[in-house]
Image 1 (spheres, rainbow, N blue to C red):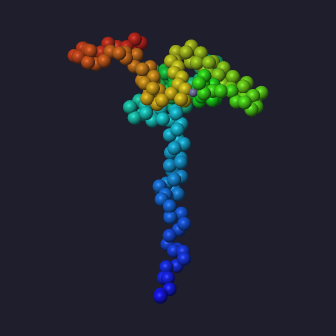
Image 2: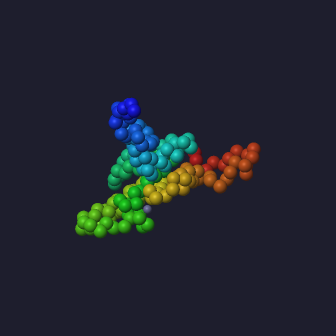
Image 3: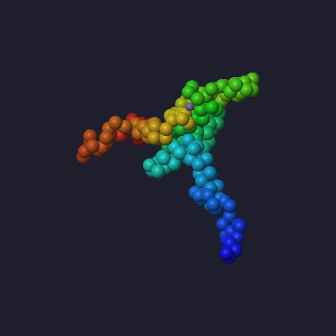
Length: 174
Ligand SMILES: [Zn+2]
């Protein structure tokens, strides 16, 4: 009987290789990063709009007479400001439940956020901007549709309805 040739532990097989791993450590870290980034609703909306050919400014600072605002997405020529509001921080009626702990601190803070949102809306509207606020829970296709609709005042008049006839300029076009 020959001695068992195989060593007890094969140095070529590291313990972590014994199980199916989807990726190398570097790839895993990369995937984690991507997952975090892709779950950011405003990033998803930006990507989708960019893929559709829309160009915009992100985190564009607008200096209004009374305040500065920084929409997540701004179409500066069309003066359309898009905000993607976090359900918690901006008190979404569906998911923005009041935190139970430290309510003495959080409630005023959240209330102040909402107050600031409304003041920003008013200041922007007064300055001729169209404000679009989307909750982070809104599915990306719906968010895209809302923005696209705002960018297309002549929406509803499809090109097919006007074959051979130049499209009528949308109101406000110069
Ligand atoms: Zn929500």
